[in-house]
Length: 267
Image (cartoon, rainbow, N blue to C red; front, side, top):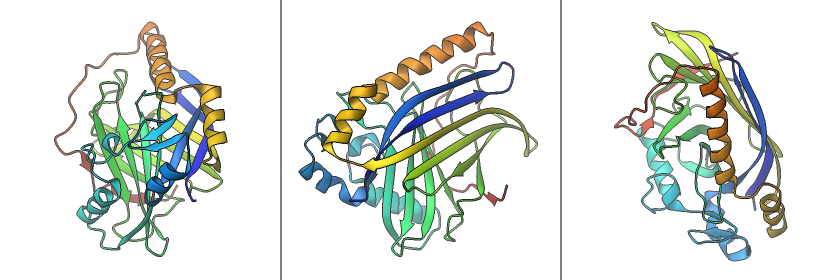
């Protein structure tokens, strides 16, 4: 099985208006979409579209209508103009644990049939349960793990960071025994990258996705979605008392996926 349990830390560092920094332990599941049904059959504590200690539901991702995830992401890749057939896809996400469900950000790692990396998609959700996806790619050329792909911020995430005139830069390591992902939230002026407002990153280590590993993760940190929601609101309260400007919630854009990022720039 290529699917893994990933454990490590999330780090946020705010560097504009008011400084704020935190580091918390987390865990994710990194599931190969082609292995979901087999994982469901062989593991007692992992469920695909069923309640278990950890579960991944098709209705929580992709089209969010319960349809299979693999055909959905294949269609997204085609819409982005990538003609290379899709091979394996790994979804890195918080699982449902004890019924709790919330995913600040999930990542889709998309490969061709010859295992060449094609794209990474960041699937972002806010506490209002709105969502938006950013597909990062090179138009069918291999995805460069050393590059910093960019995408215009299109979606309200935090009441303490505006949406307008903001741009994301991303950096990913290739998933393996270790995995990292970083999102840089920059101000922009007339299309020029400006001050860095927030850096959010995860650094994770892999282990086989087994019943023992699942039990251990849940015993240590509990339902990861519930934990994340509590800590997000705690950090929001700290920013409120630091008098960081507040921006009202705006609805997500009509187009659910940003398909055409700025071409990747080397650091």
